[in-house]
Length: 140
Image 1 (cartoon, helix red, strand yellow):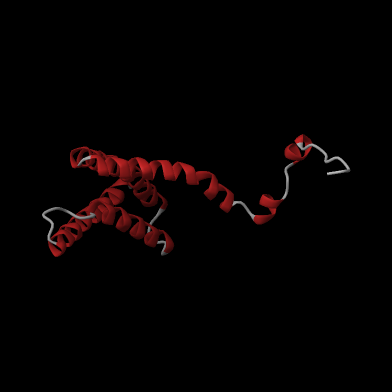
Image 2 (spheres, helix red, strand yellow):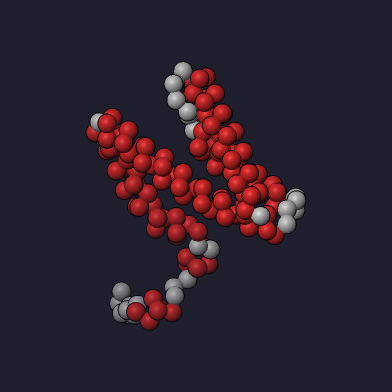
């Protein structure tokens, strides 16, 4: 039932656009502020709520999952393109901030990977690491 997925997606998108426009008016900006992000959050929340309350059959769930999977990457790509165009027009400060954010994110990948490991795996040496380790001399 792909139709249910389309219905949920369109309802979330309309609600997100309305809320984004209202946020723009509240802060005095003549633009939609976060409407796409709000729509994505609504889509995630509503689909999760429907799964938890078991109010849909397997076909309806597949339709919602399909459109959820299609919606998020497409909208993120569209928003990213708009952000890049605005950043290039905005000057070097936005470009430098973007580059620094990407570099910092890449640098934090090993840290986050290490944090996500259980403590016993972090402290124990793997068999391959132990085989490569050099034994200490008696005087050291």
